[in-house]
Figure 1 (cartoon, rainbow, N blue to C red):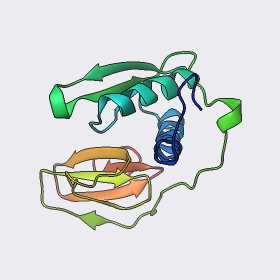
Figure 2: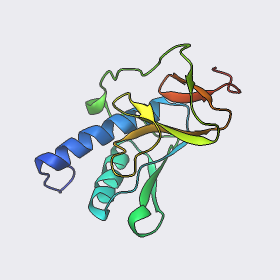
Figure 3: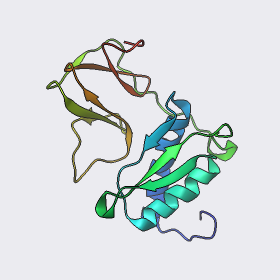
Figure 4: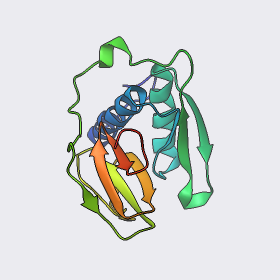
Length: 149
């Protein structure tokens, strides 16, 4: 249960996956993060879960593209009851190649590649790779011009 909302097993699984995304976001250097588009019920669950992390949220987009934008606040933290050790997705100096200008996504299960509209899963990071070369470092897509290349 989250607040007063009774959850079925699919909702529980959704929240567990979303929690992983939130923890990785809070641990990252990013100040804001766009969740993938979702229906109004799942957005409501995302807003409620975000309040436990003391994240600011905003619904953005229209119709089927409506999503939740997460923003860190000075009070943002991982709730004590949710502190779990998450695997860090980091392939070191392994270099990957993509068509220049294509968007690459990093999913919470560690897979990465171009986004799939019908099956994106929960994304940790997404980025347009302008020069066609990237690495996966500390749960982020890193390009050659980045300081952590």
